[in-house]
Length: 110
Length: 114
Figure 1 (cartoon, rainbow over the protein chains, first blue to last red):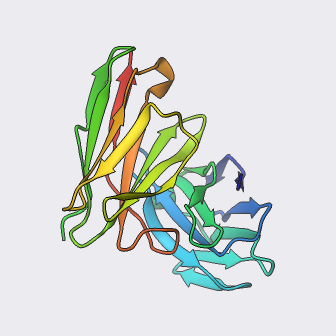
Figure 2: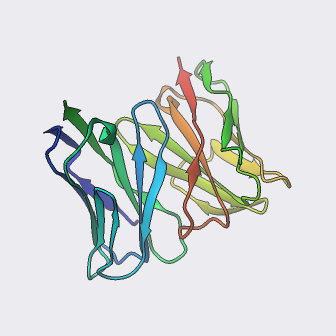
């Protein structure tokens, strides 16, 4: 079945450092969504990418969708303690169910 | 607008019992999806309901079932509980469902099976 792999599983950074998480699929995705889950909380939608090569920015967060629509990345510039949490990507083929990656847990040393 | 609500928030059950979890979506949302979240397996899709019909289903045994009512509220049932069913069960509502609409997650129900 469809699988979405996400790396790394864990990332610890110093506050102010950059952070990147990668999402890879063996099949072409129709779209990809990114969610953030704070410790003890529930996933919250961040963004959706649909077009090949699409790049979207939200303040210090930059989201990219690969040209082949098989991979995506989330980059955070100059992390802050409020960025702590687990970041999930979720992709789908066509209008099928969303398949979530395993998530990347980000911890930050203030 | 009120968010997605789930009841109960915490539940402790014994192996072999059954359990019913409830989810009330955001007003106007017609799709409800259910996920199981465990530390080892991440977010696993259980099923999606749209307009009272199951539209998509994940790879879970038949012990896991669900339904949706005419007001879009949804319930999930797990019969013959096993220790491995201990997890956080999240429901998510979206406007039209499928994979192209953002999902709004509820706070989850933490199920512990002893």
